[in-house]
Length: 421
Image (cartoon, one colour):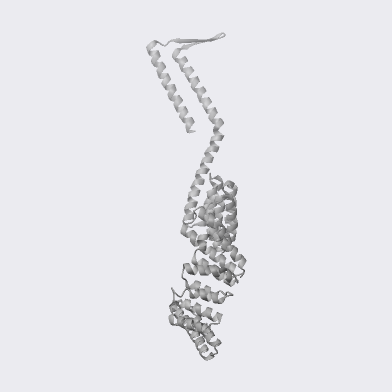
């Protein structure tokens, strides 16, 4: 309407300017006249009037044409105007919904976002934000409905919708459900950082170490985590896998798993010790004995010495000879002396075993040394002194327990609730 009004004002102004021009011409050049004939009819008038009439007809014809075109386009213009108005209201509702969400007003946010979602140019944002608001107030069915509407409004945004759903499920500790969706997303977008990061979280929370081990190379290749974080995750994952396989007490699965462990993780002493202990428990001592010896040669470790003492080789004398070769560099090591006493006892060298165990106790007291020395004395038919060493071992063990308890403040110990009167 404004456009039509401006056209009319322009035409009137143009007509006025034309009349003034004609009047000026007539006053300077004479009025002149015009004769128009049609059959028996003729019309004679001045030039000024004729010119004015022609100009007026032109203006009226132009105005009619403009009005006609505007009238034809009026439904389209009104529809476009209505669409623009709805878009404006939708944008205002989206902004209001986002503000309400940020402020924690979940129900108000949902109403604002859903009411104008159909008229929004980007309904996906309305539905996804509404889904977050519904999730925050615990309305999971409504949340899933909004996610469904989001998918219907923009099917090509499956990745964004799936990530939102997985994120909400993880925050609600629905780890299995989140993982199912993330596995599908990983097929759609392999190597996507957000998908892999959420998969890592889900696998870790349900302690699916095998699944986690499968995606670790992808986490590393796509730089989802820092190098140090990846190494820590690898250590944790393969440690858990070794412990899990160790429960079967079968050497075959453990051996196959060890071959799958990355070489830089196999080089870690903690991982090696777990594997050696699991293989010894599975009865594969002969297989790991050379590896334990090699590890002790590279890194002197009390844990490795204890593990070596758990290995039962057919040739005990040879095993004792290997352990005695370490005395040159570690003659005063209490754990080594205890190991030598254990091996000597196993080989039937009772006097040697007694000497090694007494030296071990002088270097450092231990429950195992007391027990082993008691075993030696029992084999030497000295039950009185044997019982005394057994007793000393029990007292030492109990003192160790008391010392550990005393390290904790009384407030950290569990308190019994008083019974009601």
